[in-house]
Structures are given as structure tokens and as C-alpha cells.
Length: 396
Image (cartoon, rainbow, N blue to C red):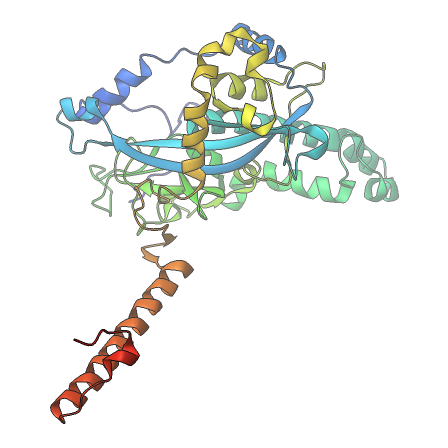
């Protein structure tokens, strides 16, 4: 039976961390996590100070692409793991001039960061933004309605939003009552979570399955997929995560992608200046941890701060790698693509327009050569002699 994902009390948390099995993959990831340092408020301020030195307060953050990359891992090979290909998850984003974020064609920086870092910062930012919006909505609209001022409630504009009261009260009510309507926020799975346990006594499925973020629509979106391993490295396209979501009473649950969509919505950039006119933490954190490609796009961020000297010396390599990720060098699930990109659909692949053209060209060419060979054979068997001089041949 699918694992129940909602608990009746805060203490009964179905997403509590489980004991990690002692596997080669687990050992590899544990080694990586040893290098991680928890981010505290003081560290965030340090990041903000470092980012402020390159003056990104006049910029906004815009999502560009999500990309998986499978590459050889010496650590996995030495650990005797079942695979030597480790899946790395990247997000490419830009810092664009705040007044030109949607087009963003000059004076911008392009960056690559680990997907978990990207989602961690942006989901927190968008969640706080959502909470602030609903608080403002309640203050500006709810009390007016309680006082009987229906016209004011319907028509009054919020101080921090263009939405009218009717719209915002409806939206916030849906957010507040999401679970009551059998929806679960998709951002619950921005970190790998188990959704099916084959050892469960009541399990109807014999599968151990996990849910985590995946790249979708050729990297233009981020969704939640089903994996067959605890590190969310091996995607199972035949499974749908919603088939394994139930509440504590066994009711089927669906995913709400509303909040997750805001992390890759290119029409709504994230401002890099906070209410105190300092660098917003979301931009400071991502800028500091990202691989940077700036000078080729007209942005001189790193060059103004010696803190990024080492990254400056490797900027060309970073730019080349980001370019390869954007140009279709890797498929949606991280495999290297040879001889043209693939268009991925659930459970299979299809050919691109260029591949279809090349295939048609070769077929027509082959048929033409076959017809020409038949004509020559017919002339020779009938005693005829083809006129080689008209075909560019030389007479003996």
C-alpha cells in the first residue's frame, strides 16, 4: 500500500529522515556531504556582503534551464557501486538588469548551480512571498468584509499586489485548505523522499520508490518524478508519483505545482534587492555558490571583487560548459547525445526535424542510385553501350 504522506500531528511526520543503508552509493554521497557547511544567518550576511561588492542590487534573477548530467565518478567506481555514472543536477540562471529582465539580452551574467541549492533558495523566497501576500490580503480585505463593506472588499487594490481582494482571498483560501481538498504541495519533494516501501506489511506494491525533482519539457520546467533509488539517480518514466500519494486515511492525493512553478517562471523575475535596499539573500546565496559566466555577456561582477579571483581564471571553461548544457549536448535525463538532440516523451523518444530530413535525403538518394543502376544494367544486357562521354567519363 502506498505510504501515507500526511500526518495528523506535527510529531507524526511521514517525511522524517530514515536510516540510510550502508551502500556504495550512500557512502559516495556521504563523502560529498562532508564538504557541506550549514548556512547560518551570519553566513548569509557574509554572502550578501560579498555579493554587494559586485553590486547586484540593480539586477533580477531569471531561470534559464534545468539539466541533468551523467558523468563518470571515480568514487563510485572505487566503492564498487552498481553504476559508475553519477547524476549531477544543474540549473542555469541569469542575473538580468531589473528594468529589462524579460528580454535580458545585454549586461547580464549567466550562472550554473546545483539544483538542490537553486530550489532551496527559490522555494524559500517564493514561499515567504506567498505568505506575505496572504497576510497583506487578510489585512486589507478580510476585515473590510467582516465590517460589511463588500464593495470595498471586491474593488480595493492591495498595497503590495495588483490582485483585487476577491482574487487574493480565493487564492489564499486554496493555499490554506490545500490538504483538505486532497492536494499536496509539490515542493515537498525538492529533496528525495521515499513514497513506496516494499517491506511495508500492508504494501500492495513490491517496489521501493522515491520521488524527487526532474527536468521536464527539455529543461524549461521542473516537475516531480519517480526514482528507483534513494538518491534519486535512476528515473522510472513508467511511474506517476500521484499513484503513491495518500493521506493518513488512505485518500488519494494530487500534487499542487503552483508554488514550484514560480521557481522557473521566466515572466516573473526575482528581485535582488530586499526591503532594506541590500542584496536579497536568495540572490546573494545563489551568486556566491554558482559557477559564473559574466564578461562575455557584458557584466563585470567578478572582476570588481578579488573574492572571486579563482573563478575568474576559469571563466572560459565555465562559459563553454554552460553553452554545452544549453545546446543539447545532454538528453533530458543526463545521457550524452551523439549525432543530434533527442526529443523526449514519457516512455520513449522521437526523432527531430533535422533527423527526419537527413533520413528522407538518404532514402531518396538510395532509391535514385538503385534506379540508375537498373538502367545501366538494362542497357548492358541488351547490348547497348552507354555514352560515357556524356557522363563525364574518358574514352580510352
